[in-house]
Length: 79
Length: 290
Ligand SMILES: [Fe+2]
Ligand SMILES: [Fe+2]
Image (cartoon, rainbow over all chains, first blue to last red; front, side, top):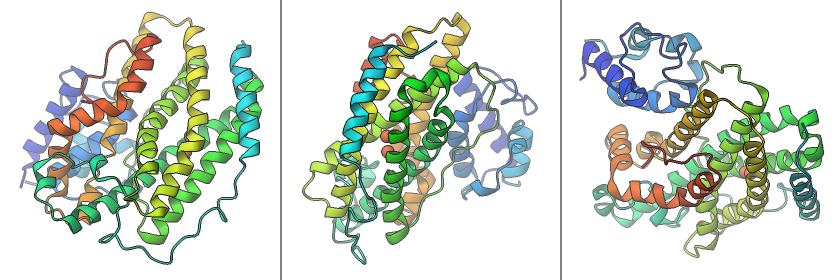
């Protein structure tokens, strides 16, 4: 089972790979357009794979996607 | 700005064909009470998302058929989700002054997409369920209207080109259950018209745009990401879970990365990418789709 620091590290690596931009856990990845909504299906798939359970898509809010810190708190696995 | 007469003329011709082949989706097809996914094929095995992977090679025939059934349900579901946003976008553009010359055809386009979803939804809700979509919007940035129109019709065309490849092959595949063949054939017939309209309109909107280099870059980046994202949905862990695979997310990742599947995506997208390249809309192929 993946720890929360590893979950965050995987997300940071994925975002940089997608965008070519190095990000921190507090970079506003969607507000600054490092990522766009079109990337969300892939991001959700990645997070589901890392935590090993589905994410309830009926229950998503735009604020869940503020930054990696918010994503890890909302969807990540606890260490 | 108004659309070129050539686009209006194509739309007029297509509207006439749509009127003549106007369909009642509630009487067009006799739905069997039940179907048997272990016995009948509902997708062509060569088109499945695990085809050409070691996982697939190890599967007995009944398991392959079960996967083919759930992949059909996924294919229909992603069409439903695509058609939902397509219908919303078409409705928004009905009778707008830039589109007034093609308003008649937009009515047919919208009507036909709604009917497609009735067929797709009819299958999913009778025999399985509609799979969830992972599409979600957080930053629908305000783009200028002409950029939004171009992106909307270009995305529609890309989505429909990929789908049509599957429809065209599966409509002809005699191994498939008659209902699956019917749904694919029926969709292909109407999508062929949508694609003629789409290519014409996308070409026209692109040729008349006067965007700065940054906007052109943004548009290209967006379309490339859209192609990757559209393809990702063909590798749905929910399908693999229903088909009984032990680690559905790893299965999705492995299939996505497999050489046979990369080649498959490249082949299916080739025609569409060729068009986008020839119009200089997308000079290079998307880096992470294949
Ligand atoms: Fe359709
Ligand atoms: Fe269509």
